[in-house]
Each structure stands twice: as structure tokens, then as C-alpha cells.
Amino acid sequence: MKALKKSKLKTITLNDIRKWYPYYDPSKYAPENWKGTAIDILKAEQIPALDRLWCILRREVIDDKTARLFACWCAREALKLVPKEQISPRSIAAIETAERFAHGKATKKELEAAANAAWDAAWAAANAAWDAAWAAADATRDDAWDAARDAARAAARAAAEAVQIKRLIKMLQ
Image (cartoon, rainbow, N blue to C red; front, side, top):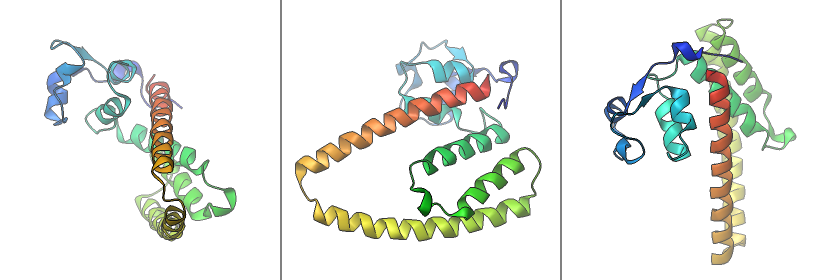
């Protein structure tokens, strides 16, 4: 899936990034005269992954179609973590509608209807998960377990960010 050609990618400077109000000065990671494209930022391993994604996932950098298709890909990746019997068909339909919309094959009205159905499914699942999580938390109160859980969560997040960066590079090339 190719959303943009590299030749169409906008050149970005540190001053551009500053205009987006990052919580740090971007010269912390790159020389003042640095400039590059979205792909250059995504490949800049000296910049934390979350900051690279923050820079790229904005209207100033990538187009709506690429952003929507990336969001659909992320949603499909997230659904891989959910047991199949717990996945609502409304969620799958919403992703498919968003992909069709990105390709100009669904209307805004269809997109809104799919989004509403997906939100209803998400709220139902979130409420059930919230109840289960509180019950699990009460049953496992222990500092060592909390630390292990936090470490596992951080490792999973880092792995997910790395995969997301690779996917975005592939989409932008």
C-alpha cells in the first residue's frame, strides 16, 4: 500500500517542528540546520520513537488518506490482541468502511454510521474490560507484580512503536 511517493514528501526543518509546540527543543536531537522528510524523521533513531511518531502523525506532514490508512492498520493490529470471540463485527465493519472512505469508495455518511457503531461496540467492550481489570487488580495487589506489569507494558509499547515506524516508512516510500 503506497500512500505517497517520496518525491511528494514535504521538507521539514527544526523550525517547522518548533511551530508544533513539542515539549522539548528539537535541537536536542538534531543540528540546528537539519532538514528532511517524514521518512528521514522516522529513520532518525537518536530521536525517541514516540517523538518521531508525534512529528509525523499530523496534517502538516502526511495527508488524510495516509493517516486514515495507517489508523486502519493500527486498528487491525490491535484487534489481533483481542480474542476472536470478543471482536465485534461492528469494529471490523468500521475499519473496512474507513479504508473504503480513504480510497474514495464510501461516503462521509457511511463513515459516520460505521464510527457510531464502532463506538457503541468499544464502549460495551471497555466497560466489560474495566470491570475485569478492577477485579484482577484487587486480586493481585503486590508491588513486585505491579513493577513487572509496568515493565512488560513499557516493553510492549516500545515494540509496538518500532513496528508502527516501520509500517509508516513502508507506506511513505
